[in-house]
Amino acid sequence: MEALPQKTCVPCSGDSPPVTETEIAELQPQIPNWKMIKENGESHLQCVYKFPDFQTALAFTQRVGEEADKQGHHPALLTEWGKVTVTWWTHAIQGLHRNDFIMAAKTDEIATEFAK
Image 1 (cartoon, rainbow, N blue to C red):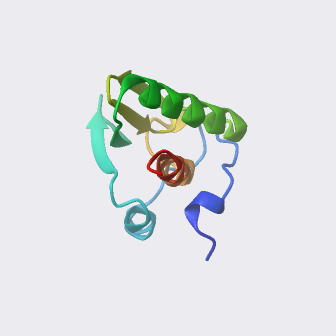
Image 2 (image 1 turned 120 degrees about the vertical axis):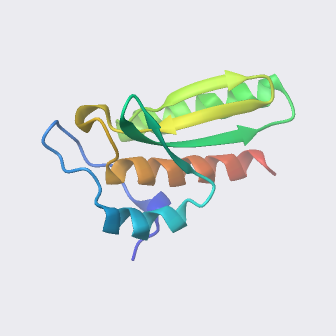
């Protein structure tokens, strides 16, 4: 099976199926630092990344934004001094799609670039 960071997001619409509980059980272990949260009744994936300063947090935010644009799937990004909170969900289905797990894994991969 191809690892999540190597996968590509697929276009979604309002009739795209959300992930099932079985799919979540398969995908969640591949992104162990991410929490599943509920916001306004919708399931989201969220992770907080820590950095030594604002400039590094800002550079990470930019890099995540660039990958999001390439994939056509965009998160909520909260950039603060020394940390960035990233939240993925699929607006069109008001919940989680496989794309959200793919992008969470890609975000983790970007974070490893900044940990060096």
